[in-house]
Image (tube, rainbow, N blue to C red; front, side, top):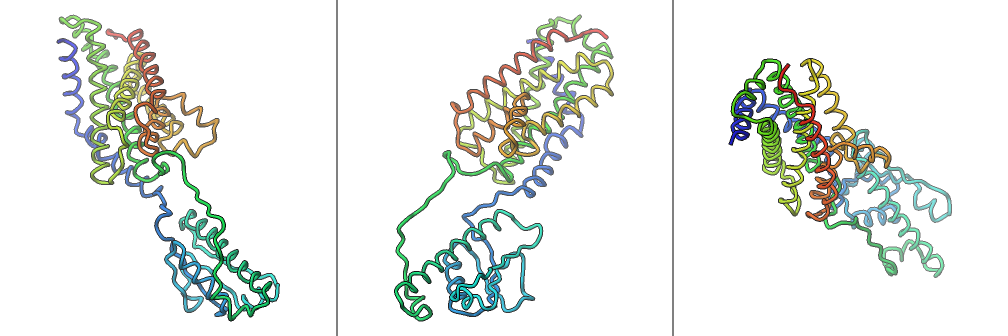
Length: 373
Protein backbone atom coordinates (compact mmCIF):
# COMPACT_ATOMS: atom_id res chain seq x y z
CA UNK A 1 0.00 0.00 0.00
CA UNK A 2 1.75 3.15 -1.26
CA UNK A 3 0.04 5.60 1.11
CA UNK A 4 1.18 3.54 4.10
CA UNK A 5 4.81 3.73 2.89
CA UNK A 6 4.52 7.52 2.73
CA UNK A 7 2.89 7.58 6.17
CA UNK A 8 5.62 5.47 7.72
CA UNK A 9 8.38 7.55 6.11
CA UNK A 10 6.90 10.83 7.41
CA UNK A 11 6.67 9.41 10.92
CA UNK A 12 10.30 8.24 10.79
CA UNK A 13 11.49 11.67 9.68
CA UNK A 14 9.61 13.39 12.50
CA UNK A 15 10.70 11.10 15.34
CA UNK A 16 14.36 11.43 14.35
CA UNK A 17 14.23 14.98 15.74
CA UNK A 18 15.07 14.58 19.44
CA UNK A 19 13.32 17.85 20.31
CA UNK A 20 10.09 16.37 19.01
CA UNK A 21 9.81 14.13 22.06
CA UNK A 22 10.33 17.08 24.41
CA UNK A 23 7.51 18.98 22.67
CA UNK A 24 5.49 15.77 22.54
CA UNK A 25 5.54 14.98 26.26
CA UNK A 26 8.03 16.93 28.39
CA UNK A 27 6.99 20.51 27.76
CA UNK A 28 3.21 19.84 27.92
CA UNK A 29 3.59 18.07 31.27
CA UNK A 30 5.57 20.99 32.70
CA UNK A 31 2.83 23.42 31.63
CA UNK A 32 0.13 21.04 32.90
CA UNK A 33 1.79 21.05 36.30
CA UNK A 34 2.05 24.85 36.39
CA UNK A 35 -1.53 25.53 35.29
CA UNK A 36 -2.95 22.63 37.30
CA UNK A 37 -1.37 23.98 40.49
CA UNK A 38 -2.38 27.57 39.68
CA UNK A 39 -6.04 26.71 39.10
CA UNK A 40 -6.54 23.88 41.53
CA UNK A 41 -10.07 22.81 42.27
CA UNK A 42 -11.37 23.89 45.66
CA UNK A 43 -13.42 21.19 47.28
CA UNK A 44 -15.98 22.45 49.80
CA UNK A 45 -16.14 18.90 51.12
CA UNK A 46 -12.86 19.64 52.87
CA UNK A 47 -12.80 21.73 56.04
CA UNK A 48 -12.05 25.42 55.63
CA UNK A 49 -9.40 26.65 58.04
CA UNK A 50 -10.60 29.52 60.22
CA UNK A 51 -8.83 31.16 63.15
CA UNK A 52 -10.96 32.90 65.78
CA UNK A 53 -9.79 35.75 67.97
CA UNK A 54 -12.30 36.07 70.85
CA UNK A 55 -11.78 39.51 72.43
CA UNK A 56 -15.11 39.37 74.28
CA UNK A 57 -15.01 36.09 76.21
CA UNK A 58 -18.78 36.14 76.75
CA UNK A 59 -21.39 33.42 76.53
CA UNK A 60 -22.41 34.75 73.11
CA UNK A 61 -18.88 34.67 71.68
CA UNK A 62 -18.44 31.13 73.00
CA UNK A 63 -21.76 30.18 71.38
CA UNK A 64 -20.57 31.56 68.03
CA UNK A 65 -17.36 29.52 68.30
CA UNK A 66 -19.29 26.33 69.16
CA UNK A 67 -21.61 26.77 66.22
CA UNK A 68 -18.71 27.35 63.85
CA UNK A 69 -16.95 24.22 65.11
CA UNK A 70 -20.11 22.25 64.25
CA UNK A 71 -19.78 23.39 60.61
CA UNK A 72 -17.19 22.19 58.10
CA UNK A 73 -14.36 24.16 59.68
CA UNK A 74 -10.94 23.52 61.08
CA UNK A 75 -11.21 26.18 63.78
CA UNK A 76 -8.52 27.42 66.14
CA UNK A 77 -9.06 29.94 68.92
CA UNK A 78 -6.15 32.37 69.12
CA UNK A 79 -4.64 33.71 72.32
CA UNK A 80 -3.68 37.16 71.06
CA UNK A 81 -3.87 39.42 68.05
CA UNK A 82 -0.23 38.65 67.26
CA UNK A 83 -1.27 35.08 66.41
CA UNK A 84 -3.56 36.12 63.55
CA UNK A 85 -2.96 34.04 60.41
CA UNK A 86 -4.26 33.65 56.84
CA UNK A 87 -8.03 33.77 57.71
CA UNK A 88 -9.24 35.13 61.07
CA UNK A 89 -12.65 35.94 62.56
CA UNK A 90 -12.39 38.70 65.19
CA UNK A 91 -15.10 38.92 67.86
CA UNK A 92 -14.68 42.43 69.35
CA UNK A 93 -14.86 43.41 73.04
CA UNK A 94 -18.38 44.16 74.24
CA UNK A 95 -19.93 41.90 71.60
CA UNK A 96 -22.51 40.26 73.90
CA UNK A 97 -23.24 43.45 75.83
CA UNK A 98 -23.91 45.44 72.64
CA UNK A 99 -26.06 42.70 71.08
CA UNK A 100 -28.26 42.39 74.18
CA UNK A 101 -28.55 46.18 74.41
CA UNK A 102 -29.59 46.44 70.78
CA UNK A 103 -26.45 48.35 69.81
CA UNK A 104 -24.99 47.65 66.38
CA UNK A 105 -21.75 45.71 66.56
CA UNK A 106 -19.55 44.11 63.92
CA UNK A 107 -17.74 40.83 63.54
CA UNK A 108 -14.60 41.23 61.44
CA UNK A 109 -13.15 38.56 59.15
CA UNK A 110 -9.68 39.16 57.75
CA UNK A 111 -7.79 37.19 55.11
CA UNK A 112 -4.24 37.53 53.85
CA UNK A 113 -3.72 38.48 50.22
CA UNK A 114 -3.40 35.58 47.81
CA UNK A 115 -5.49 33.17 49.88
CA UNK A 116 -8.33 31.13 48.37
CA UNK A 117 -11.33 33.42 47.73
CA UNK A 118 -13.79 30.51 47.45
CA UNK A 119 -12.85 29.43 50.97
CA UNK A 120 -13.28 33.04 52.12
CA UNK A 121 -16.78 33.21 50.63
CA UNK A 122 -17.67 29.89 52.23
CA UNK A 123 -16.46 31.14 55.61
CA UNK A 124 -18.42 34.37 55.24
CA UNK A 125 -21.69 32.59 54.40
CA UNK A 126 -21.40 30.14 57.31
CA UNK A 127 -20.51 32.89 59.79
CA UNK A 128 -23.61 34.75 58.63
CA UNK A 129 -25.70 31.62 59.18
CA UNK A 130 -24.30 31.20 62.69
CA UNK A 131 -25.03 34.85 63.56
CA UNK A 132 -28.63 34.46 62.39
CA UNK A 133 -29.00 31.34 64.53
CA UNK A 134 -27.57 33.07 67.61
CA UNK A 135 -29.82 36.11 67.16
CA UNK A 136 -32.87 33.86 66.70
CA UNK A 137 -32.19 32.20 70.05
CA UNK A 138 -31.78 35.60 71.73
CA UNK A 139 -35.10 36.82 70.33
CA UNK A 140 -36.90 33.64 71.38
CA UNK A 141 -35.57 33.80 74.93
CA UNK A 142 -36.33 37.52 75.20
CA UNK A 143 -39.95 36.94 74.10
CA UNK A 144 -40.40 34.22 76.71
CA UNK A 145 -39.07 36.46 79.47
CA UNK A 146 -36.38 33.94 80.47
CA UNK A 147 -32.86 34.86 81.51
CA UNK A 148 -30.90 34.88 78.25
CA UNK A 149 -27.43 34.20 79.65
CA UNK A 150 -28.48 31.25 81.81
CA UNK A 151 -30.85 29.61 79.34
CA UNK A 152 -29.00 30.29 76.07
CA UNK A 153 -26.94 27.08 75.95
CA UNK A 154 -29.92 24.90 76.83
CA UNK A 155 -32.21 26.20 74.11
CA UNK A 156 -32.39 24.07 70.97
CA UNK A 157 -33.96 25.57 67.87
CA UNK A 158 -36.36 23.43 65.88
CA UNK A 159 -35.28 22.93 62.26
CA UNK A 160 -38.30 23.76 60.13
CA UNK A 161 -36.68 24.30 56.75
CA UNK A 162 -33.95 22.25 55.11
CA UNK A 163 -32.23 23.67 52.05
CA UNK A 164 -30.12 21.49 49.81
CA UNK A 165 -28.27 22.86 46.79
CA UNK A 166 -26.27 20.92 44.26
CA UNK A 167 -24.86 21.28 40.76
CA UNK A 168 -26.60 19.66 37.84
CA UNK A 169 -25.08 16.81 35.83
CA UNK A 170 -24.00 13.35 36.87
CA UNK A 171 -20.51 14.62 37.72
CA UNK A 172 -20.52 17.67 40.00
CA UNK A 173 -16.98 18.89 39.43
CA UNK A 174 -16.17 22.17 37.67
CA UNK A 175 -13.46 22.62 35.00
CA UNK A 176 -10.31 23.27 37.01
CA UNK A 177 -7.12 21.69 38.27
CA UNK A 178 -5.24 18.97 36.42
CA UNK A 179 -8.44 17.57 34.90
CA UNK A 180 -8.60 20.78 32.85
CA UNK A 181 -4.91 21.61 32.45
CA UNK A 182 -3.76 18.24 31.07
CA UNK A 183 -6.31 18.08 28.19
CA UNK A 184 -5.83 21.81 27.56
CA UNK A 185 -2.04 21.56 27.31
CA UNK A 186 -2.40 18.42 25.18
CA UNK A 187 -4.51 20.39 22.69
CA UNK A 188 -2.19 23.42 22.71
CA UNK A 189 0.99 21.48 22.08
CA UNK A 190 -0.74 19.25 19.54
CA UNK A 191 -1.43 22.45 17.58
CA UNK A 192 2.21 23.51 17.81
CA UNK A 193 3.56 20.09 16.90
CA UNK A 194 1.24 19.32 14.00
CA UNK A 195 1.34 22.84 12.58
CA UNK A 196 5.12 23.08 12.84
CA UNK A 197 6.35 19.59 12.01
CA UNK A 198 3.48 18.75 9.66
CA UNK A 199 3.16 22.03 7.76
CA UNK A 200 6.86 22.89 7.49
CA UNK A 201 7.68 19.34 6.38
CA UNK A 202 5.36 19.71 3.37
CA UNK A 203 6.81 23.12 2.49
CA UNK A 204 10.39 21.81 2.71
CA UNK A 205 9.64 18.68 0.69
CA UNK A 206 8.08 20.81 -2.06
CA UNK A 207 11.04 23.22 -2.17
CA UNK A 208 13.58 20.35 -2.19
CA UNK A 209 11.73 18.50 -4.95
CA UNK A 210 10.94 15.49 -2.75
CA UNK A 211 7.20 15.67 -3.47
CA UNK A 212 7.88 15.83 -7.19
CA UNK A 213 10.15 12.77 -7.09
CA UNK A 214 7.61 10.91 -4.96
CA UNK A 215 4.90 11.66 -7.52
CA UNK A 216 7.11 10.22 -10.29
CA UNK A 217 7.27 6.94 -8.34
CA UNK A 218 4.33 4.46 -8.27
CA UNK A 219 2.68 6.78 -5.73
CA UNK A 220 -0.49 8.49 -6.91
CA UNK A 221 -1.70 11.96 -5.93
CA UNK A 222 -4.39 10.38 -3.75
CA UNK A 223 -1.91 8.13 -1.95
CA UNK A 224 0.35 11.15 -1.27
CA UNK A 225 -2.53 13.09 0.26
CA UNK A 226 -3.69 10.09 2.29
CA UNK A 227 -0.16 9.29 3.51
CA UNK A 228 0.57 12.86 4.60
CA UNK A 229 -2.79 13.19 6.34
CA UNK A 230 -2.67 9.85 8.18
CA UNK A 231 0.92 10.38 9.37
CA UNK A 232 -0.07 13.66 11.02
CA UNK A 233 -3.18 12.11 12.57
CA UNK A 234 -0.97 9.33 13.98
CA UNK A 235 1.46 11.84 15.55
CA UNK A 236 -1.42 13.84 17.02
CA UNK A 237 -3.09 10.77 18.52
CA UNK A 238 0.28 9.61 19.87
CA UNK A 239 0.70 12.91 21.68
CA UNK A 240 -2.83 12.85 23.14
CA UNK A 241 -2.46 9.21 24.20
CA UNK A 242 0.86 9.80 25.97
CA UNK A 243 -0.31 12.99 27.70
CA UNK A 244 -3.62 11.53 28.88
CA UNK A 245 -1.83 8.40 30.10
CA UNK A 246 0.84 10.47 31.88
CA UNK A 247 -1.85 12.73 33.33
CA UNK A 248 -3.70 9.70 34.67
CA UNK A 249 -0.59 8.11 36.20
CA UNK A 250 1.14 11.28 37.49
CA UNK A 251 -1.73 13.67 38.31
CA UNK A 252 -4.55 11.17 38.74
CA UNK A 253 -6.84 12.92 36.24
CA UNK A 254 -10.31 11.57 35.51
CA UNK A 255 -10.90 10.52 31.89
CA UNK A 256 -14.68 10.37 31.98
CA UNK A 257 -17.14 7.48 31.83
CA UNK A 258 -16.62 6.70 28.12
CA UNK A 259 -13.10 6.10 26.82
CA UNK A 260 -14.41 5.20 23.32
CA UNK A 261 -16.09 8.63 23.12
CA UNK A 262 -12.88 10.30 24.29
CA UNK A 263 -10.85 8.42 21.69
CA UNK A 264 -13.30 9.10 18.84
CA UNK A 265 -13.58 12.84 19.41
CA UNK A 266 -9.78 13.06 19.75
CA UNK A 267 -9.30 11.19 16.47
CA UNK A 268 -11.67 13.50 14.58
CA UNK A 269 -9.98 16.57 16.09
CA UNK A 270 -6.57 15.29 14.96
CA UNK A 271 -8.03 14.79 11.50
CA UNK A 272 -9.13 18.44 11.36
CA UNK A 273 -5.80 19.83 12.61
CA UNK A 274 -3.84 17.55 10.25
CA UNK A 275 -5.84 18.80 7.29
CA UNK A 276 -5.26 22.40 8.37
CA UNK A 277 -1.48 21.93 8.57
CA UNK A 278 -1.43 20.36 5.09
CA UNK A 279 -3.33 23.36 3.73
CA UNK A 280 -0.97 25.87 5.34
CA UNK A 281 2.10 23.93 4.19
CA UNK A 282 0.78 24.10 0.62
CA UNK A 283 -0.20 27.78 0.36
CA UNK A 284 2.83 29.34 2.08
CA UNK A 285 6.03 29.77 0.09
CA UNK A 286 8.42 30.93 2.82
CA UNK A 287 9.24 28.93 5.92
CA UNK A 288 9.62 32.04 8.10
CA UNK A 289 6.13 33.27 7.23
CA UNK A 290 4.65 29.82 7.89
CA UNK A 291 6.30 29.64 11.33
CA UNK A 292 5.00 33.07 12.37
CA UNK A 293 1.52 32.26 11.05
CA UNK A 294 1.45 28.89 12.83
CA UNK A 295 2.49 30.38 16.19
CA UNK A 296 -0.05 33.20 15.92
CA UNK A 297 -2.90 30.93 14.84
CA UNK A 298 -2.15 28.27 17.47
CA UNK A 299 -2.20 30.86 20.27
CA UNK A 300 -5.43 32.46 19.03
CA UNK A 301 -7.13 29.07 18.72
CA UNK A 302 -5.88 28.05 22.18
CA UNK A 303 -7.02 31.27 23.87
CA UNK A 304 -10.44 31.55 22.23
CA UNK A 305 -11.01 27.79 22.25
CA UNK A 306 -10.81 27.39 26.03
CA UNK A 307 -7.30 26.02 26.51
CA UNK A 308 -5.82 28.87 28.54
CA UNK A 309 -9.03 29.19 30.59
CA UNK A 310 -12.33 27.26 30.56
CA UNK A 311 -15.00 28.52 28.17
CA UNK A 312 -17.49 28.14 31.03
CA UNK A 313 -16.14 31.28 32.73
CA UNK A 314 -16.13 33.64 29.72
CA UNK A 315 -19.08 35.78 28.51
CA UNK A 316 -21.57 34.07 26.21
CA UNK A 317 -20.56 36.13 23.17
CA UNK A 318 -16.89 35.26 23.55
CA UNK A 319 -17.78 31.62 24.08
CA UNK A 320 -19.64 31.57 20.76
CA UNK A 321 -16.51 32.96 19.10
CA UNK A 322 -14.57 30.02 20.54
CA UNK A 323 -16.80 27.60 18.64
CA UNK A 324 -15.59 29.12 15.39
CA UNK A 325 -12.43 27.06 15.91
CA UNK A 326 -11.95 23.29 16.31
CA UNK A 327 -10.35 23.95 19.72
CA UNK A 328 -13.62 25.31 21.10
CA UNK A 329 -15.46 22.12 20.16
CA UNK A 330 -12.78 19.71 21.41
CA UNK A 331 -12.35 21.47 24.76
CA UNK A 332 -16.11 21.62 25.31
CA UNK A 333 -16.32 17.91 24.45
CA UNK A 334 -13.51 17.10 26.90
CA UNK A 335 -15.28 19.07 29.63
CA UNK A 336 -18.57 17.29 28.98
CA UNK A 337 -16.86 13.90 29.11
CA UNK A 338 -14.49 14.54 32.02
CA UNK A 339 -16.38 16.94 34.28
CA UNK A 340 -20.05 16.41 33.55
CA UNK A 341 -20.22 12.67 32.98
CA UNK A 342 -21.52 12.86 29.39
CA UNK A 343 -21.26 9.80 27.16
CA UNK A 344 -21.15 9.37 23.40
CA UNK A 345 -24.66 10.74 22.84
CA UNK A 346 -23.83 13.98 24.64
CA UNK A 347 -20.99 14.85 22.27
CA UNK A 348 -22.73 14.01 18.99
CA UNK A 349 -22.92 17.74 18.07
CA UNK A 350 -19.16 18.00 18.70
CA UNK A 351 -18.49 14.96 16.52
CA UNK A 352 -20.58 16.49 13.73
CA UNK A 353 -18.89 19.92 14.02
CA UNK A 354 -15.35 18.56 14.06
CA UNK A 355 -16.16 16.21 11.18
CA UNK A 356 -17.32 19.28 9.27
CA UNK A 357 -14.05 21.09 10.02
CA UNK A 358 -12.13 18.00 8.87
CA UNK A 359 -14.05 17.72 5.60
CA UNK A 360 -13.71 21.42 4.74
CA UNK A 361 -9.99 21.67 5.47
CA UNK A 362 -9.21 18.35 3.80
CA UNK A 363 -11.00 19.46 0.62
CA UNK A 364 -9.07 22.75 0.69
CA UNK A 365 -5.79 20.92 1.36
CA UNK A 366 -6.39 18.68 -1.67
CA UNK A 367 -7.37 21.66 -3.79
CA UNK A 368 -4.26 23.72 -2.98
CA UNK A 369 -1.74 20.88 -2.50
CA UNK A 370 1.31 21.66 -4.64
CA UNK A 371 3.84 19.07 -5.75
CA UNK A 372 6.36 21.31 -7.50
CA UNK A 373 7.96 24.54 -6.31
